Length: 479
Ligand code: ADP
Ligand code: GLC
Image (cartoon, rainbow, N blue to C red; front, side, top):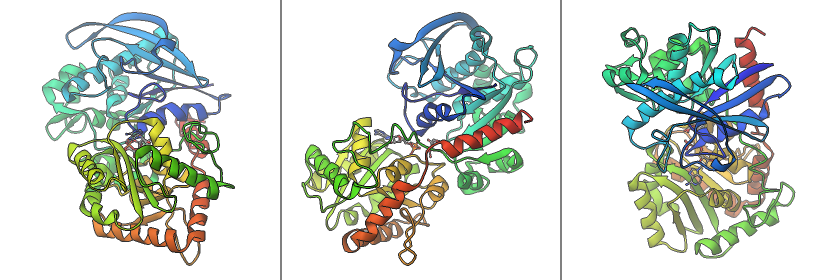
């Protein structure tokens, strides 16, 4: 049996702010349980769901940032996967896992040290510790540092998975030194110093045995200055240990045939008649004009610059022209929240701006919309377009990162493709492709339906990507 531990700051169904939670909460389920015992450890947040299902295991005190601190350990088994939770009410209170940068740095440094320290207490000895994003970047460093000596840890290997290179966990050197408890030895530009600051993700990238990211295109892109977030040199230096493995989604949670969050379920045989019933139901629910002939564009997204929202802002007026409706669900930068609210106010029959977080509404949008717009500036993988494909909602995306790897552009002459895409980060190029999609929808309905059918038929479940992670684990363990 190969023991693997996922260390992560979020995982569905317990706590989610973005796609990382979907990945950390669904991928572990898809490993071959005969050979891989994959468990997950994350903080026990006050704001998480299912707290009442957790079972208390033990506690101990651990020195961190100037004093001994309480570390509680809880456990639960969900969908056959064991999840451990690190408890410390001082660090993990509040109504969101993240907030103040400075405080987040201290608390995730605590989490990394506590997660490793808890393992002998739990009695689980992973051969590979698989870390996700900057919040866990300290783990690979600790495994080569203070934890290396002990018999329990000496041969543990680590993987650093980059879900988003933009966020690195950076603060001044003295602060990062204090929070990590590492010696001066580590604070040089070849280790965890970057451009005069301390950088936790960099620590992970330098010290992990292998590095992965969540699509092959993003694995290439981050070797370049445009996408490399000032780490491209380091990524190039480690390119032999870097692999891009595209994300999947949980095909049981996201299944239009069984989804009890949507008004009318459907499948690839009957979507032509049943899918649009979800559209009229959503139009009614959101107060839009009820008419199943409208071209409904869905957006479910964090409202940040990453997601290409300035392109949408630039041509929002034109996007709304004709028989189009736009349904937005998301929270984030106030400039984008206000922009969507403004258009919802201006065109109440056409635009619905839902500026909050709702899993129920997200499923209804994936089911109801004809197209899904995701013109990201950069996109390590993206899960929303995979959810759209699964629901026969045709994605319109920019050709970057995982969007490029998972959406195949429609070719009118060969009748291939599962969506629409454009290359340059340019609002009018995006508008051109949206208008082209509308033309196919209104004037070539059969072709449109064939695109939707192909979208529903592609397979982005975890089955093939989980095998790739298994191969990576095997190669690291010498199998
Ligand atoms: P990222 O992780 O960069 O935000 P992804 O596409 O990988 O982007 O994952 C986003 C996930 O978060 C998807 O599951 C999407 O449905 C969900 N999501 C984003 N915003 C909301 C929201 N306001 N309400 C519900 N789900 C949301
Ligand atoms: C990040 C990325 C997104 C990716 C997700 C899960 O949040 O922004 O593209 O799908 O992580 O890997």
